[in-house]
Amino acid sequence: MDLQPGRVAAMVAEASAAEGHVICHSTLGTAEPAICRGYADGPDRHRSLALRLARALGTLKEVDPP
Image 1 (cartoon, one colour):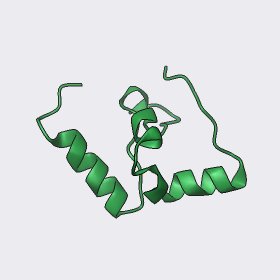
Image 2: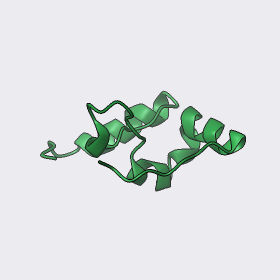
Image 3: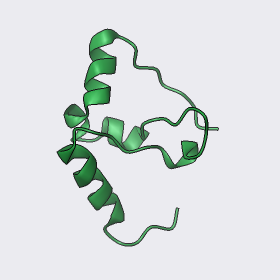
Image 4: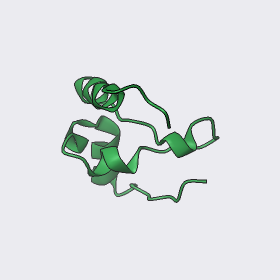
């Protein structure tokens, strides 16, 4: 992806502030978009409601991007 400088940091900050997550760029526009692996492994992962719920429920599933 060709992102402007600082865009990734801004996406992570926005997602963390909203208890959200960052969508994997490889799954954008697909029927089953996934959470970005980099975000899921990053230091802000504990702020994501979706990741916390999936881990708590045991439903977290890793997928290979299309």
